[in-house]
Length: 103
Picture 1 (cartoon, rainbow, N blue to C red):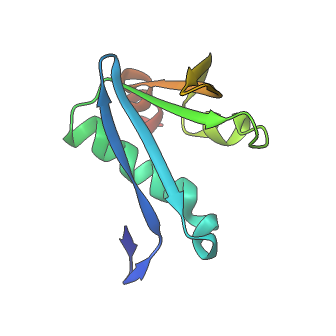
Picture 2 (picture 1 turned 135 degrees about the horizontal axis):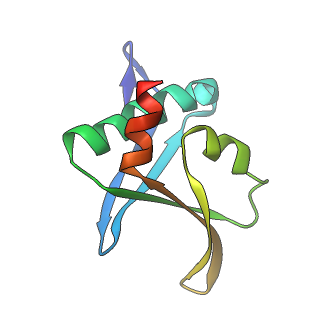
Picture 3 (picture 1 turned 90 degrees about the horizontal axis):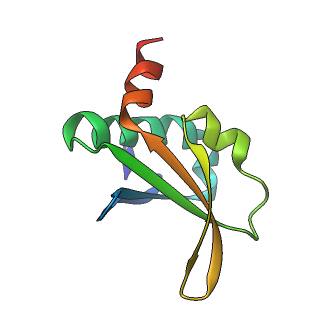
């Protein structure tokens, strides 16, 4: 992804049976732009791609991301195991996203 000619990172959506998984990796020099970049991408996911449910899986080793993820409207959805590794699981309903964006 590029913002104002600068490479800020990469990310995207992977379609799954129950919605789409969302991933975002920012260059450390652009960590302060995460909320804006994620908001832009989630808008594209909901309004352009028509996604209805978006999920995030974060490793348990990562410091507690709940507050940052909640600012984007994601809610805790338990944990999942992928290839023998446990992850915190968060979900965003597109209806909730639309309501948040109107505020």
